[in-house]
Length: 231
Image (tube, rainbow, N blue to C red; front, side, top):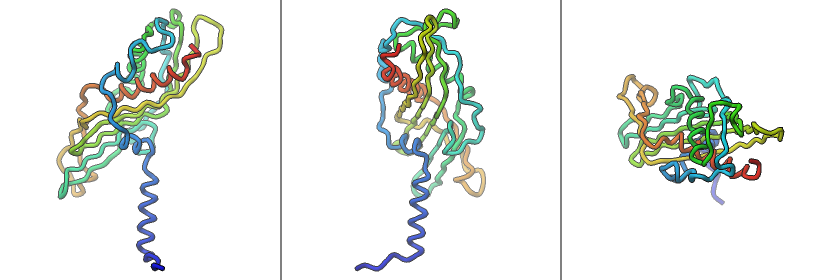
């Protein structure tokens, strides 16, 4: 019978297991997720809404305030990873999403997705067949700058829909959308201090299509499918 591993090795293995288990499930999901379609029409087919032609008014987007210095477990976070290769520096960090106004981004992306699905958006709540409140449950963005770099996003949104023209009760649905595209579109700055893995500036340079928008469209698609009999 083989002998037991030394106590120091057992402790090292235990620490490794705890560190791996502590990784955010959403961020790991983004890492291992397969690449997705790169167009809005492929993620959310045109005219696929159960209430095609009806009008929607978005009352508001809830979820903030959002932290300026998020952690990997935060509700809204950008996880940037960079590895330059053997002999070069490793950089990994958690940042605020590279978006000026998160609620406005979600509002615009949800509206665009509803239009894509075949519904109409209205600027007057009184003219809407449906009124919608969106709550941001999770919004994760990940860029992985390696030879096979990618950018990925996960959007978990809660939709509260109220019928505007009848007294019938409204309905709610929570849906999670994921999108992953090739190309990290991330720039990592030069070493600034003694510890490069802690002190490298990172910048997201964007690019089309917008992977956050695609993830939100995927969430809208799943919500419409789950609530098809409620509209």
